[in-house]
Length: 148
Image: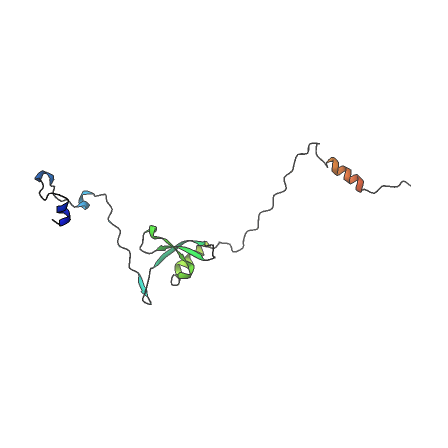
């Protein structure tokens, strides 16, 4: 036993009834899924490691004007997706082009804006028509007719 275990006063003798034979956990837990394969190593480009892009999922514009892309990395779990500045996407032209094609509208001409709704009409308490003030103004603005 190591000194740390002997200091903690654990005995090195166990009763035979406390011991069990070893069973492989893969045979005991048959529904357990095997661990995922390890992610692929980065590719060396000009002696610098680069990871392969599987697809571009989304984009966003930061307050400072830079555009960032949400990247799905080839061979990695979706929890490993990351936001990467567009300026760092040098060798990933094909996934970026595929994303831009998906984002482009089918019809290049934008649809016309919807017509403006008419102004709301208010109910007039005097039964419709011009208000009494408007009638008085109309009478004042009409020239007087002279009789022949």
